[in-house]
Length: 240
Image 1 (cartoon, rainbow, N blue to C red):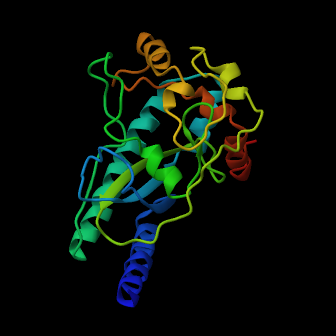
Image 2 (image 1 turned 30 degrees about the vertical axis):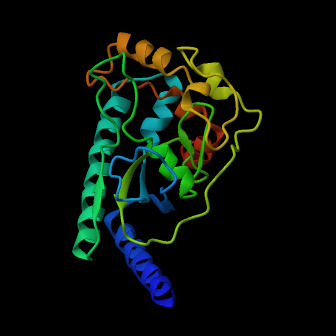
């Protein structure tokens, strides 16, 4: 048992240092063994990696969605995949198995708007944040202005403390501003399906009809900019 604990501490500390060095804004580890239908059934440890969005582009969303955010969304997705590739390679080099899935996939069939794995599940399980009323991950450091990806591994990493409740309180700003009227306005709790928070189809269809989403991701972003937790990030950057 002591050897297992020492090995967990060793690989966790080593990976911590590596992740900092490759530029992840936030990261954490979690046990996914209780999650059904994992994309890689033998890999039950989750590594949640996040990159913050450009604060100036986030600020621009206060005026409404636009092309700058669509481009930023794509750039950050690319960077997340690069981070996940590096972390997977690092673990494999150290004798473990690892794999990952893309941060977001293009919607080919609008009748099947679902994720292969909800990256927010790993992020909340790793203690990085909670799910806001906008159905996005909310962190105390970046608010909703962060995107995430998950690496799956069999490395015995030391898990973070899961977040099990919302810290949105009575705030309703994301619901008030949502142009699709898709936000239900209820607070998240652990295990709650995303459909209770957001009319996912309504959000996607609204954005698909707009001429700023050529890649078919169904994105808007205005709810990110109005989040009070996001405002704290923008204030730290000197933009508010």
